[in-house]
Amino acid sequence: MKIEVPEKKYSYLEYQQLIHQLLESGKVTGDEQSESLFEYTKLNMHRMHRWEKTFSPNPVLIKKIAELKSPMRWVVITEGWCGDAAQQIPVIEKLASYNPLITTHYVLRDENPGFMDLFLTNGSKSIPVWICLDDKSGLIWKWGPRPLAAAEMLQLLKNEGVDVSVQKQELHSWYAKNKHQAFQSEIEHLLAHHSNF
Image (cartoon, rainbow, N blue to C red; front, side):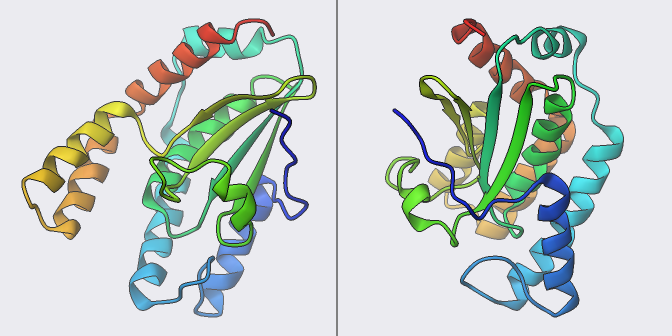
């Protein structure tokens, strides 16, 4: 499946700069504007900066990333207000830094509805979606919007009728405690099943 990456894409730095610029004018990325999304976005910037400073990948994963031999593009569909994206993106960017053959692009969901429609999760526009592409065969993998253990925990809370605000608190507490161990394990699995690089 050959995938055309949208022309309107951002580097990690450009993505952060865009979010900061919008926040300064009282706005957020995406079609919807609200006070709650504005506050979520501000909080997410803190989350991203915290993971930039504190996240350290496990040595096995670093080695696997560093040994990749073929160029690949990691494209992440995101929005600044998305809490899961704020948790994952610094990790993805950090891992990409271990191999110069990897380039990262960040595209906004609401700016690219046609692209988003290619990568729905159970019919929904859940983000983030992390897509790995190569220049030969196109799509290598699609991952997202969160690690399986986090998704299962969240589903359990939804089934129990727990308030959405409490669900979000529990989700971000899970991220803080797990320290991306589950995410790294899933990345190792992806790499192991696509080892022809």
